Length: 303
Image 1 (cartoon, one colour):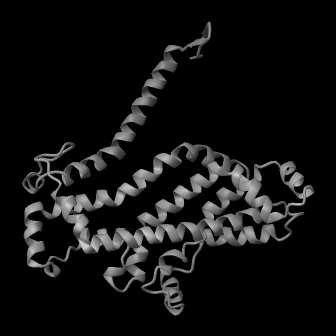
Image 2: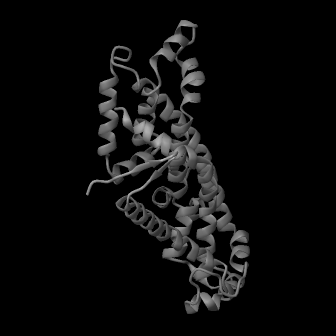
Image 3: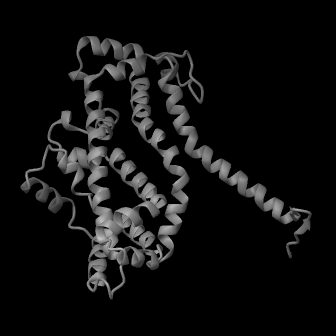
């Protein structure tokens, strides 16, 4: 059926088929958003409910017998606080190192072959490492022989060159007109000055997008913490949460802690810690979201 759209003043009169499509589109997107949002709301409701209500399965999307006990106990637990601080340190250090490496790698790779003759060879090397890696055991042996086990560098350096983010930033750099760079060179600017004063200010959408990827990746990683940390007190937050959720060690708790756990229940305590672990990302995302789509699409068009 041929779609007809009539202009009425400054408004567009949509055809029936177009209205049906938009209604179905909005309905599908709403259902998809609810599927992502409802589990988080349920975790929040459980964390704010009493132990009896949570154990009985009465809690759905609204707290039952509202209480802050789980959060109060979680915030005073030394293991949780230690793991939270380690994750914060990892994100701060990992973000600085990773963004520096991404920018310094993407800038030369964004040049044409007549400017950077080895561009194609380096690009293939990076793409090859994105598709293939040495495996878990060789990686662990490398970290061990370098003496980085039980250190924050074991969580930062192995993933310091995320190739997907490098490609994203490289393609965004290539969308910047060459005339701007040539004008800077005529004025006496070098490559570092051009990068700092021209490329980076013009690349804020892509920088925000890559920053979000880097922060979320470092904050949510748990597997490397379990592999490279020999002691639980060096676990980042997500590794610690995975440990207490999958295999809680109730025998190591003191008698007072076990008494509190009976009062607030293990389920509400886990839910409180999970939600506390998600708060930093929930706080960061709204500030970067407005740049997310433009940075992702503009950095993925030009090859």
